[in-house]
Length: 321
Image 1 (tube, one colour):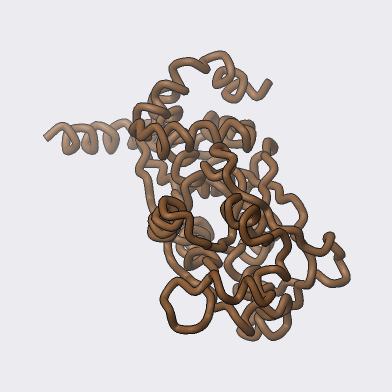
Image 2: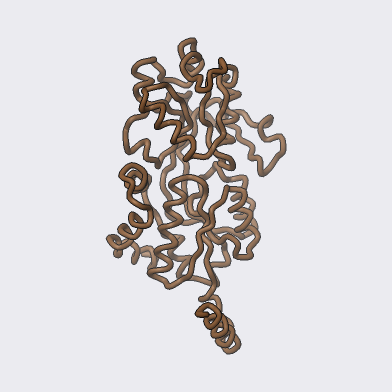
């Protein structure tokens, strides 16, 4: 009943002052399918509701789904909470050119790599990417006893998953290892089970993540980044992206930002100011993820507590200072 009354009142007010109706719009916050993106999305939602009185809705989805929602400009998705550039350039750059999306001024450093648990590097001398397909490496990463090893390459819709698919071929990993494509939570269960019995496992890793907070993984050495040998074509740009890409070196550190629909600049200028200035470091995010995943404190509580303790910082984001 309250929702019906509110709708009617908004309609009446809008007939006299059309611009005020935007204040009642629901802002839909896209949460991509990885832990840091989920946490940032929830934090943005909480700040907007508590500090700006804006109604929000969390929308879970893959990158293609969330970016398509923002591009539509219909409010189905207003915000992508964790954009990795240039991983997501295939989706983002066309929207920047068309003016459909705005990226935050604040950003944090994102790191992509390949990792093994530290006991694997210590006990089996696995320290480089090529060690994964050495004679000793071929024997220890077979998770399903089919005679070939496995390595987790990420989840569906991740820009980094495409990078890993290219690296599997160009590093020669696919000669002896199969890439596992599955959700992050599903793989983490496998990882923790393997660690509990100290069995070898190899995987794509990124920071911010709880793995780095626990300090129990080894980042495998790759050839230093060389732009001439790092050519990535996005699946958003070409059906032959895999054939047209070539990656034989490590990734650069990524710029990770919040992205939001440009319509918010007019409809919700305070929200746009918040989103432009919102910024946590990778280290801060890793600590918060640690509280949620290792200490098993509910994400709602972790976010609410952080917001309550960081009022001055939020004030600065809201004021643009």
